[in-house]
Each structure stands twice: as structure tokens, then as C-alpha cells.
Amino acid sequence: MFGTILITLVFLLAPVGVLWLCRNVPLFGKIGPVLVLYIIGIIIGNVFHPAGMAQVQKVLSNATVPLAIPLMLFGCVFSRSHTRSRLLSLFTGLFSVMLMVVAGYFIFCKGNPDGSRIAGMLTGCYTGGTMNMASLKTMLGVDDTTFVLLNSYDMMVSFSFLTFLLLIGIKLFRRILPTYTHSSAASAAAIEREIKKAEANPYKGMLTKKGLADAGVLILVDLAIIGISAGLGLLTGDSWFLTVMILMLTTLGILASFWKPVKKRKYGYEMGMYLIYIFSITVASMADLKEMDFSGGATMVGYLTFIVFASLLLQVVLAKLLKIDSDTMVICQVSFICSPPFVPMIAASMKNREVLASGLAVGVVGYAAGNYLGFLIYQLLNLIG
Image (tube, rainbow, N blue to C red; front, side, top):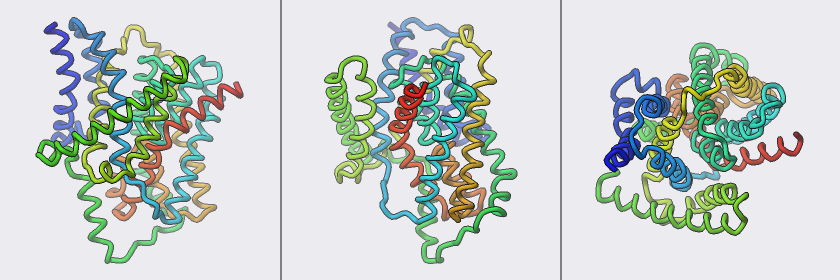
């Protein structure tokens, strides 16, 4: 009993310590909270074996993702006012990623029995983020070991992608593509507010009276959406239960984000992301290193590398043809491949803070669309074999 309570507390509270380290220790900040939690989880699962851990792992891994999906979508602002470049970057980016996922499947994954599931997960990951990848893992029935390996490979490839942009890519694309046109000085204050908001501690203020009230309302709405989604899933039978439930969670989460009592509340995205952190350490602790098959690692790394860099190349070609400016193209591609949390860093590196809104807006659409697109690609690849 004591072991079960202890490991539950470790899984639930470890993200607090990791987030503190990432904000205060530069080395951990560069590694990122998800990777640090993965390392801790793997150590726990392979070095320590506290009593009752298996049951805790099962409960937390199954509960955190469904809880996180609506909460993260509550915190997204779906704006109808987008510039031409932003819209074109959104659609060409989604098209580029999906095309390269399918093309890469036939090059790297055709003989893999889990190939279509992996392709579906990667579509969700590279159009949305970790939340979508975790959702599709549950929806498509991907085993924990495959998920952990793919996430680890993704971190390696995404780091290479960011390194390329910072060392060569940004300067190169500014030579090839149209130059970004800066807005008037009148919008500088609004841009500065966006930057401060993106760089601030997202959990600050959550434990105040107002923060707890907001969190309470969002949790109640979240639980209601889970109940409705689960009920609709049960009506479709066991084989379609998870698929229908995840898609309904996404749909109802998007709809709820427009509802005023939800829209005016803070901390939905932050609470959802915290649940994803718990999911990360929990799933990593379920990966048995002795059972992991690293023989296919080179193939999987090749597949991920192909998706990331081939989609970038296609996006550059389309941006050239459609006259999309370089900075908008880059920030939107970062939002797709690495997810919105990396957008402020790249915007600062480009010394162009105005593109921050474009990157975050595209990321919001990616979060919303990722589950649908991942499931669509999975079904498409199953149909064409």
C-alpha cells in the first residue's frame, strides 16, 4: 500500500520539480521537460520496482490523455482573422507533412505490421504535438514501448531540425523567399504583450482564489465532455469505443472553447499540458529496456528525418511559388514540427517578434486537427495497403 501511494505521488509531482529545473537551470531548459521526464520514468521503470506500480501505471496512462485533450483545447483561441501568408503557410504546411508521412511510409515502413499506426501517430505529432501523438497512441492501440521509442527518436530529429534552422536555415530561407514586411510601430505594444505572455511562467497565479475558481469550472466542463464522449463511444461498440471517444473529446473541446463561461477562464492549456507531463513519465516507466528492439531504430530515425526535412523542403518550394515570406514559413513549420512551445525561442532568434502570433495561431489549428488527420492517414494507408 505504501509503495503504491509513494509511486503515485512521484508520478503526480515529478513534473513540478522538472518544470522548476527547466526554468532555473539552463541545461535542463535546453533539454526540455518532456525528455527529462522520459529519462526519469525509464530509470524508475528499469531500476526501481515499487509494489503496486503496474496498477498505478495503467490508471494514469489511461486517464491522463482523455482528461488533457479538452483542457488543452479550452486554452486555444481560434481567431478568424489571419493574414494571407499565415493561411497559406497553414495549409501548405499540413499538406507537406501529410504527403511526406505517406511517402515515407512506403519507403521505410511498408513491411512493418504497425506501419499504418506509426504513420498515424507521426501525422498527429507533426501537425499538432505530443498531445496528439499520445491521443493517437490510445486511439490506434499502439504499445507503450513503440510509443516511447518514437518519442525519443522524435526528440533527436526535432533537435536536429532546430539546430539546422538556427545555424543555416533562417539565413538561407531569407535569401530564397520574400522578405517579411513589418507592421507599423502602433502594434509594437501588442506584440510585446504577446511575447511576455509566452515567456512567463504559465502556472503562476493558478493557486490564487481566482485561479482555483477558473480551474474548477474548466475541470467540471472537462469531466462533462469526457462523460458525453465515453457514452457515445459505448454506443458504437468495443472496437470503435476509443476512436469515437477521442474524436468526440477533440470535437467537443473545440466547441467548448467558443463558449463564454469556458473562454474567459484561464489555465486550461496549462492543466492539460501538466497531464501530458504525467503521462510522459508514466509511459516511460512502462518501457522495459531489456525488451526494446533497437534493431529497427535506424529505419525509424530515417522515417522521421525524411518527414521533417522533406516536408520542410516542399514547404519552401510552395512558399516560393505562392510568395509566402520566409519568417512566416519558418515559424509555422516550427509550430508544426516542434509544437507551439518552441515558437517564442525561434521568433527571438529571428529577431522578429511579430511572427509570434502566426506561429501560435497555426499551432492552435494543429492541435485541433492533429487527431483527425492522424486517424485519416491511418485509415488511408490501411485501405491502400
